[in-house]
Length: 478
Image (cartoon, rainbow, N blue to C red):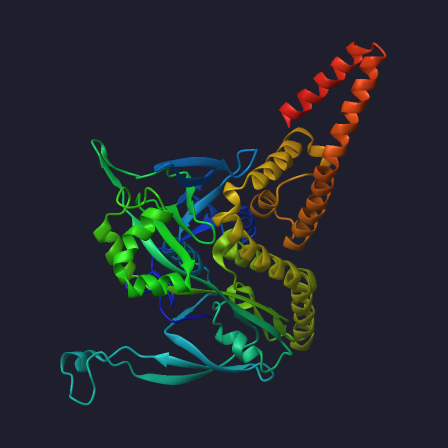
């Protein structure tokens, strides 16, 4: 049984706190999880609705001239995929609807749960009666929706109901849950970059195979491609900036022209920018950590309900899909095919849920932290020479000396299935080594210089020449 407030396949439905078209980034973890979903055709259907993004396109301005620079995500050519949220919802719901033991119950709102007695209560929204809709009375408006309460007995509840999870709220009454919630100072507002008109028809206004970023030091504007040749764009700026722009609307266009060169009027007209800014909501960004994710054998939470994260690593959806894979791996490992009693099944499921919480919590906490840190990388570090140097060194070592096991943190997160906590451990280790090498390098170079001078004095210049030639080759290749 699946309970949701409304059918997301209905075009009139807007998910709570979201506009309809926010795009998502699908990477290896999400793809791998769908491969293990035992749902033939699902992955192929999803991939057919995506656009490859091979890297970031960084936009900037120098001496009054706008410029752009492509930064590939991976030295081996791997890429992430842009996918429309509403299209993905439809594909997943369609796949679920074909499963024989799945029933949908729309317009059900969880209002209470007892995870010891395994009972839940839902507020069921009823649509207006046809005769009433045609003949409304003064006391009952035509758009009213009557509700009633429904009690449901259950064996096992999975709460995948988002950052403001009702399941988590009721779970807290039974589990000794540690809970941390943080709103960052940045808000976001969605914009749309429409297609450009060409002699051959509409086309993408900018490169369709990049995630476009206009970094501005501590904030940014981004654009992600859609199959309809639009770009779903998002403005991430401090709440104080929104307050100033709200109070002084005349500053909006100059603000964009100063910080996000080439957007206005080349991609969005001044009037359209003003209308979108005024019409689209300015929404907060929340990060949530909690543990445990379960109570006995009765309930478990996953996805944003367990670990809502800011969107700057593009891992929210991928981590949620990975939650499902890891959860079912533990359920399959702990629950035997044949069980003699309901009590034995409950005991086995409780063990599986405990193993799931134990494994998954450190990984979820890690990706939450990485997502917060990646905001700085996207709005500032991508233009930093030191960031580029470390990325170049790590990619060169990964490409030319794969046996060393070096890789960028981003490639481990987005193109692999290592646990997030292990990715963080390896990235920290590589950082310590690189820091030591960079600190020691001046001493090493000075030592080489002194040694070369001594060799030259002993008339061994050919050896010096070969040594310096070898070092030059290393530097050029690295």
